[in-house]
Structure formats: C-alpha cells, structure tokens
Length: 80
Image (cartoon, rainbow, N blue to C red; front, top):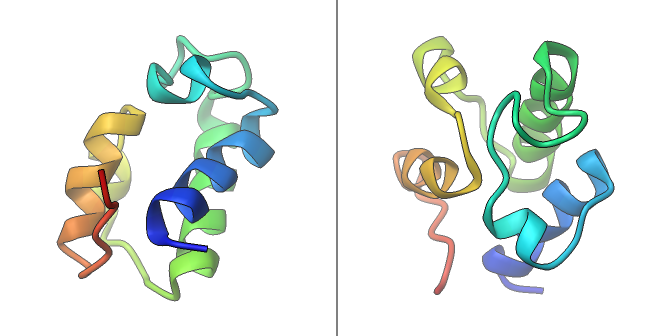
C-alpha cells in the first residue's frame, strides 16, 4: 500500500467516509471531525507513518489537502 492509499485509509476509518468525501474533508465541516475526531486523526496518522507532529502542524491540519502539505515536512509524500 502506498502513502496515498494509507492516507486515504486513515481518513476513511477515522471518519467513516469514502470517495469524494475524503478529498473534500475539512475540520468542523466533515461529520465527526471535531476536536476529539481531530486528535483521533492525528494519532492515527502518527501511527500509520511513524511520525510525531509538532503542535503547530496539528493545529494547522485543517483539511485533507492541507494535511498532504504538512506531512511533506515529515518526509511523508502523498503520491498524486
């Protein structure tokens, strides 16, 4: 499984969404992506990619698309 598939899987399992919903996922807009869902997502991503995100990056992680850019800082490239 490549990084893109892993990334999408984390979103799918955390928020129980699929397809276009994943691509358009945004904090407080996507069902379940509240403060608790946010920390669940962060923990799942850290586990999946064996990273530890900085607090500023956790706060800035506001959408599926923004997350791709943040993960690049940790050498996790989400293939397009």
